[in-house]
Image (cartoon, rainbow over all chains, first blue to last red; front, top):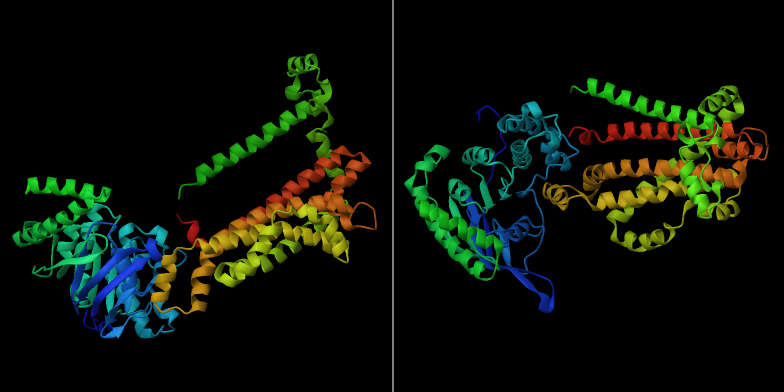
Length: 290
Length: 289
């Protein structure tokens, strides 16, 4: 489908350097630190996945990366330029669909170029290409509520991609999809990434999703959020669902990541977190099976 | 979709409901008893024994029967004065309602998007809002140069508060992620207003205007009754439907009272239907769930 004759605007992947970033909310003695001294790099052209227990402040980090909020201390730089606000260079896909309900699929996809007054024939052609790419050419005139969950996610991917961001930030985008659609979306999204060569930053709480997608895996510790460790996921691409199930290497990485996460969850568990308790239980079952 | 059969069935139900209502009314009115027989006599006796006056129960016999109402209606349906009443009330409703939309929507949007405007405008608004529009009637008669304007003003107030509250609430409840997404993709403030806030508030505007329209009809009728319909010319017409009802009451024509009441019901129904249709047309994404 990625025909060479179709004019696709050049993608210049970006690299984000997060150094010493902390974020606190509230004032004085009621101050709560959500992110503490985070330092990591979202490497150029790679798919970096961040995983951590739910409620560990990952979404806060995303708001900082997107520029919706400013860090309390530390700096975030995109290609050595400090981030000062929202920009088309760093587009976010939110947890639930943020497609504009009052616009058709087509108008949603064209939102960015239209807002910037860039509706050139090339952009329109690119929109056609993307519609085919995400398999929604039949649904261009439909409103978001008429699309299934998976279609909505794909429409949103297209809406982001038409802006040619230097980096795509995805905040648990497949949460809430049914298991089947979710796995298909992994394979689909992974294919899109492999083709585009764009820098992607993907946040999730799902270990299978993380290992399937990642080039690099950032494992976060619980509140305040810090990078606990970084795993290189050296699995071959293109990645297919069937290969992943049978891959020993994938299972090794998964087990390694799980044991780190388990340690983190145990810490929260001792502080009385329900989410952590669930995780510890799920982990115990899993290890017995393996 | 296969709604044809369903629509037919619900239409049949609606017709049945109205027919049964009319029959019960006719029987009650003619026999002078609820449900055609003196079914409430034990209750009345019991109440009487307890020392209540027997006449405290509402008396269906005083209400003219539907056939009589229909007869009265047929005799005035060619009367220009009757249609003049329709015209006057509709005109006042339309004038007040349009003014409420034209002022209320921008005002509500301003309150919603501008913190300073909200801080200054909203307290005054909230102090004035609980005052029922009808309480404004005497003041507005003094305040406005003509009686026509004072009725239109009271009508305007009826719809204005509802529309503003709905616009403010609707605009404020737009998901913050829409703004973030739009901002990220390079929208200007004007673009966000035009393409996010306005369509995002539209469903609330539709709801607010439908409710506002209902209030407008309530208010116009009462205002016409109180102010004497604004007609110094006398005669049958010119005062609007509210005055028509009041005039019928004063003149002792009970059939015409009911004619007036039903006329207002029909007028209100037509207005809401028109608004509903228009509302569906401007918010196409809502009807496709």
